[in-house]
Length: 212
Image 1 (tube, rainbow, N blue to C red):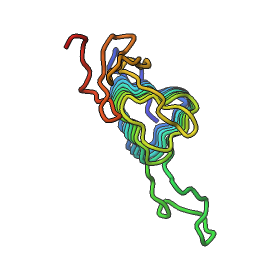
Image 2: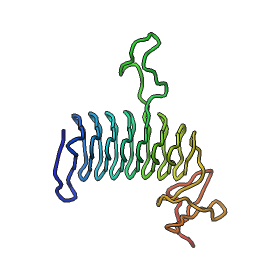
Image 3: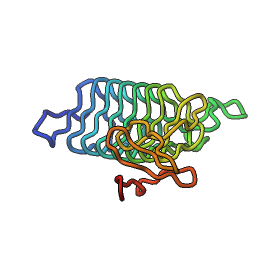
Image 4: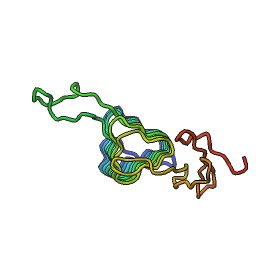
């Protein structure tokens, strides 16, 4: 188990009740709280926060400045990029055809199935108790609503909600729902930035200021 004390902004803080298995990599400034469990060979970036009871499976890769709230489960095969928010009790699954036993009735082992993890791109947010099915990609700066069940890819900047989740709008980098400004343009009510929609997508490089 890894433990440390706080030493300025470069410390790694791991609560004594957390379990950190062998060969993990944890970036400076990261905090891992009560009863979290990080399995072998996981990689966690700098300045992350893992809340109470978080489970990070073996081989999971987590970028910098990621917040994972209480009791979220990130299973083997998943990758989380920088600046992602994972809400309480979120589950990222990794098995498209889950079975405890094979067709011969024997208990399945690690060689009997293929993990197909979830990719959560930069800046995206997943609301409390959202479930993301194996193999899905959550786009950059997308926002998945609380309780949603994601069964297909979520585009960049999309606001997705429901069971199964569907895009119901767009959000900006500030996380707030964009309002229509006509002719495929969308405005962030917090920052005043305008976004341009093209072919049903908002690209991160299409942000512009009024008058430009």
